[in-house]
Length: 216
Image (cartoon, rainbow, N blue to C red):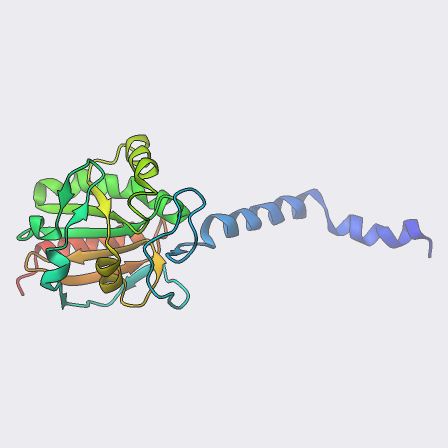
């Protein structure tokens, strides 16, 4: 068999239709294969992050109800805000909170942000406060976080988590983004690790409705 004949099956296999199908499959892997980042990953722009111990492989869905009470040191912790002021989670006691741990260098976090903006517009008038807390170093990432807030028209509260606050909320699971639905009396009702653009938003909406109707 000549070399020309031996190449014929390969050329036949890689038909235009198979090439297009392969490109589509690879694109889907690129779009949905990574749903979270590890908070221990180094930031390519903003320097080191506030870290928590790395956890198992991330899951882009909700965990069962946790109902852990936020302790006073977490509620009262003085957190730097992107607008230059200080904020505390206790500032929003009596309201349902969505606390989101994120970082500017985290791709899934960036994809999730427009959804959080939509959620804020939808639920803020009903007594829900969204607080985005970056796990990055607040000094090294100050400019990048503020620029990100401006570029993405973020209209909810944004600041930085202290290492202690991040460690308590993550509870050993170092993946970001992580979102926590917190009831009016300070209990964590639901926890979301990672982000999937089709699965996560309706789950968060359902959890917010549950928190708004939660009576303890």
